[in-house]
Image 1 (cartoon, helix red, strand yellow):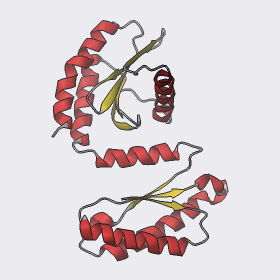
Image 2 (spheres, one colour; image 1 turned 90 degrees about the vertical axis):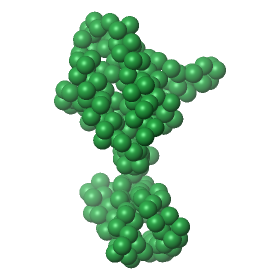
Image 3 (cartoon, one colour; image 1 turned 90 degrees about the horizontal axis):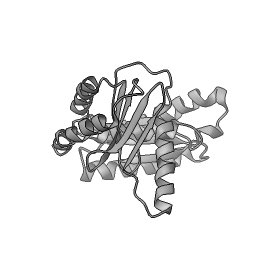
Length: 224
């Protein structure tokens, strides 16, 4: 269950009642379901009050989750995320949710680290194919830009949109300069992969061959 609360709702208590009813019905039919809540439109709250407002709303949501779940259904005690369409919070929330819903993600990240070491890559990322949310990544060299995932995701989504307007499908992108080389390629049936290397002169053919050689291994992990 992904439930969205309007942070500026004037009837938040009533909203909580609706949420509790939904949660009780969900747990009756799907006892092992995971629950996530978004406290949305946080941009409408003054910056100085955002943390306190979010903490207050999240505390109430968790309280009602516990009442609906009972002691024997700890999975229903949801996780809350703040969100807004005007900053990176919505992207972070959806990425965190997707990350938790994907099976074998821990094993997948271990394998990505091994793959990055083989390629001598600075970073390797897996994106969900439809949304381009990051679902797993391996960072071999610390990166200063904390928002790089959202930036890359937005760039690729805009490029995919341009491709679709021309009746084309996005499959592959290669960007390089004297400081780095980056490869984005269709990977498993549900993912794209991005490989970033510090060597701007690395062979594109060799890198793509390694990416495509790894596909079957990650497809097997995805299907478990």
